[in-house]
Image (cartoon, rainbow, N blue to C red; front, side):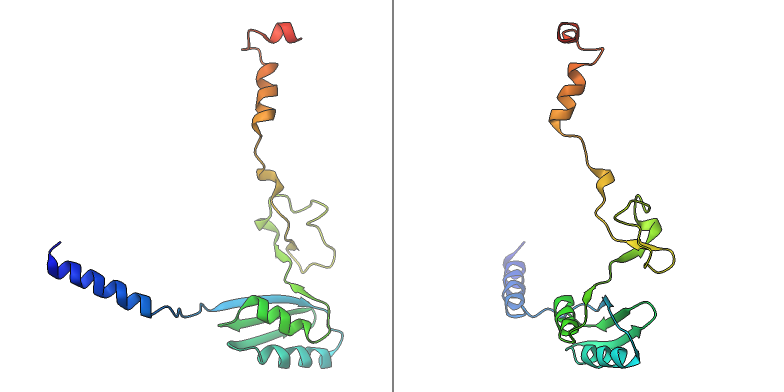
Length: 150
């Protein structure tokens, strides 16, 4: 790398320092909002449309779901929805084939839309600890000292 390459590198480095402002990514935020009537749905839609960066707002009264798309921050959308004094949470449901055990008591929900279950942490991927491993080795047939323990 010659002198010109070094100067070009430093120039690019300094110009990138000035351009700290990043463009926000388009996001889709889904919320579960308790709505009883069309008036509630209109109120929620008008409040969520007022969120800075919201491009489209869809409200599904039957599923109690509101979806906001655009250059939005999920925390700001949640806060705006909570300002309606309705019970609000992020959309808790995922397709049942995305969950390792969809019929676990925490995942199964009678109120869930068809083919959906509640999002739960994946407990099936917990690995054994070294303590568990040492107990299995202690009583293993390959361990020559296992007979003295038994």
